[in-house]
Image (cartoon, each protein chain N blue to C red):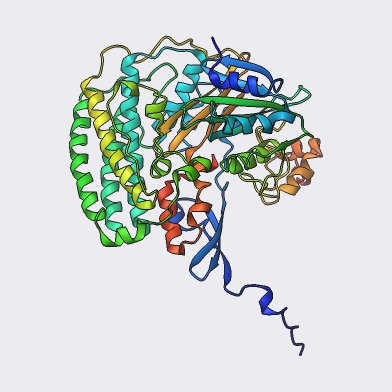
Length: 186
Length: 377
């Protein structure tokens, strides 16, 4: 399968920026170094041959044992040329990523969701807050090491208390199974 | 008695400014949306949406379920257009596994998706008109929506959360006589649409409340990531049914209505025209419905090879995208991500309401057509 014009254009204009290109079930993905991410995205948006003016989605994937555990993924679309591409960068937990809200204002809430659900540090974002979870929430639900059932079901009112309980795993397990302090009184 | 110290000079803050909450319990926010408005008198200076009140962690839940068991969770996102959510998901899995779907199944899927568009637009029309003050339309639109729900009930047994599609096809063929009922519904709906338009299209109050309210240019709408009718209202020709045809759309003949002004009235006209185009697609689907099976060859246990894909379809609200990652080892998706159209459109509210009156905020929430189940997931 021959790479489409968009992929070739980036490879010509920014040599070395693309680490790998992948093609799977009809989708093209560019894998880019985190440091050059903004540069590549800006090129994709502005260049004539690519013209990706529409940011469909910004999301992430967590691959825990890996050192740079997150894949940050941008799904782009061009309303003029009607083609799609995905751009992917590997990010570690303590690394920072430049916000793309300057290029696509649409990324504002999408990046907030990535921050909220994965805890990826996005810098130069105009309004980086949690969006789906409450502001005082601790932890990042979409990470693979976050339990499906949440931090516990004890004190729905105060998430801070949840975490306090979570740090004492045995006691929390007792409480959940009904063998808590109450049952000792009996 | 102590006298409270006088406040700092009033010139330090603008006494005209007032911050109020609209919602989360407000009938016009269509669920639990909270909009924090900064007002100068009746004029909106700024707005901030607070969402997440019914966040259920659908993405996380789906990552811990079988590929098949996810279908019924997708129902619970945009619960007024559940069949469209099913369609987007099963097609994404089919794309990931490269499964061939029988032509008859693709036709019925198209019909169901368009029927769902009619139901969703009926709900939008009723609530949008009610928010602006035309209560009659709500009663009429819900009456017709009831017929659609009856048709769905006859097809799959449920009225709202259908679970109506399977990876590789459909669980059931259409029941005998269903096509005849659908045809008579199409005839009925066409007449009712004229009734709605008589009530609204040239209504002076309706025009006053919607013309030049929330105007947005095409370029700005693209930048903000608007999709569906709000994007087409600004004259951007983008409909995934045409641009990236899914189901059987490439075999059908239909038009994409476009707006010119990008205001609330144009978005209204577009959705009214989409009703008619949906009826046109349904009729073509029934006329050309091919014979054959409705289920393709699918392994009993779904286990897509390692890989990822993004598949988007045109839901009644806009671009509904599914980003799925399979690790090739387990029977669950490794990553399940939904690109919800309402979420991305709601982002534009902040831009649309600026400079308008409080009463227009209500009209603008209506014109975006949000479903909070999908925004919050």
